[in-house]
Image (tube, rainbow, N blue to C red):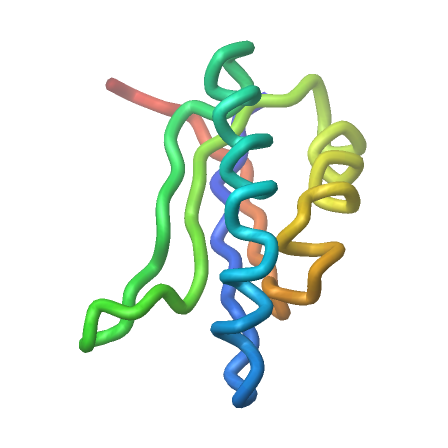
Length: 94
């Protein structure tokens, strides 16, 4: 099952530092997921100045429980980067 995940970073003064601190670990996991086919596409949400303020991705998991398990272990979640996460079932057309 495919899901669209839109995750918003915190807006406090330390938000950018939290992102920088765990970014490489997050990207390492995303590269593994891309290799195994569970990460269909993903990238950063940007503000008007081009600064990263969140993330969006389309992922594929067996079910919502598997998606939740991934989120619980992602460095952006465990590191307190993502503060609000929207999840929507999704079907890629192209």
